[in-house]
Structures are given as C-alpha cells and as structure tokens.
Length: 262
Image (cartoon, rainbow, N blue to C red; front, side):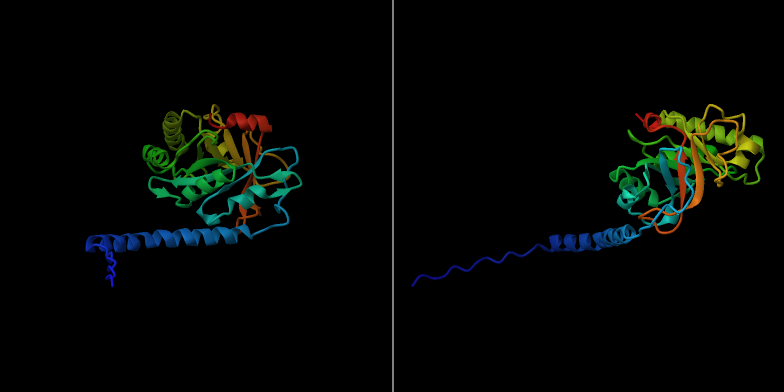
C-alpha cells in the first residue's frame, strides 16, 4: 500500500508576521476614519429641504455657496442634485486657510467631493490684517492646488484687527501680489459693504470683488461693479446640516465659464 505524502504546512516568517501586525495597527485609524466619513456623508445625504429658505432674486442665473469646517461633513451629490424652480448650486467657495498657521482640514475632502459632484470650486483665505501677509500667502499657496475648471483664489478680509487703513491696504496688496504671481490668476476680494467703503474703496479697482450684503431690498450699494454677492447666511441646502451662505454671480452662465481657470 502506497504511503500518503504529507502536505507541507506553510507558515509565515516571524518578520512578515510582525510587519502585517504593524501594518494593521497603522492602518486601523485610517480605516476607521474612512468608515466614519462614509457614514457621516451618507447621513448628510438624507438631509433634505423643501426650499432654499431665503429670498433669491430671479435675475441671476448662476448660484453657489461658501463653506468651511463649520458645515461639517457635506454630501456634495445631494448639494448638486438640489433644484428648486430652476435654481441649483453651480459653485462652492471652500475655506482653506486662515492667518499664518490655521488650515481648515475639511477643505481637502470638500475639494475632492465637490469636484466629483461636478460643482465648480474655489478656495479662500481668511485674512488676518495684523499678521505677516507673506506668511499668510505662503500658507495658502502651500495648501491650495488650483486646476483647470476651478475658480480664482479668494481673500476674505472683513476685520480690522486694530490696524490702520494704510496698514490693512499695504498687507492686503502684498498677499494679492504673491498669490496672483503663484497662480497666474487675479484673486477675488471678499468683504462686506462697510469694510469695503471704509478701507478698500478706490484702492483695489483692478481686482474683482465679492460683497456680503444681507438684504433683499437691493443689491450691494457700492460704486464698483461686483462679481459675486453673498446675499444670505441663512440658506438651507440638501446634504448640509444647518444654515449655509448663499451667493449669486453677476453675469451669465457663459461669463461664469470664462471666469474659470483655463
């Protein structure tokens, strides 16, 4: 009778076992985060509103929002799919940085997910007038990657931080110059009507402006023609928990396409 051959048992080498165990330990937080994000994104997708909840002037054809980490995890597919009487979200400005050190960590996921949902994106920096403008520009340029189809970079300047108008303008000019050189695109200045009139009017006429002005009675009351108008901070948009800023573009859909980075 022939003897049965014993099958050789394969065992992992101790080094490979240690490597696999270490890899599992290192990957566990990443896997947990991915699962957590997917769950929160799914839950955000269940957030639905009957309307945008604000007055929207009907003469504007391009609409958008601006967000930061305060809106938490967003379901961008739901954002893009929302359409109320022909109004939908065409663009989103995403907070990327603030001052000389602060990075909005939600920016990276917002940028990735919004692009995948076919929402045109732009990045903005919250400017702190009392801090070094070179360091602020360097931080923004380090974090923000602009590609074809994106909107121009934005600087959000709305607080004095106990600085004189001359100092505010000088620091802002430095930031604008450095960022424009880096991306070969003219940045947009975001501010409110009062700040613009008190500190910026007549000094930055070559730059497009995005004005915050929360009233349905009339458009932003400034002499310069504005490009974007943030008309409310109380909008409700599918896929986003809570209120969000709502904006309109001052131009046609064709003009909006021309604004995008080529």
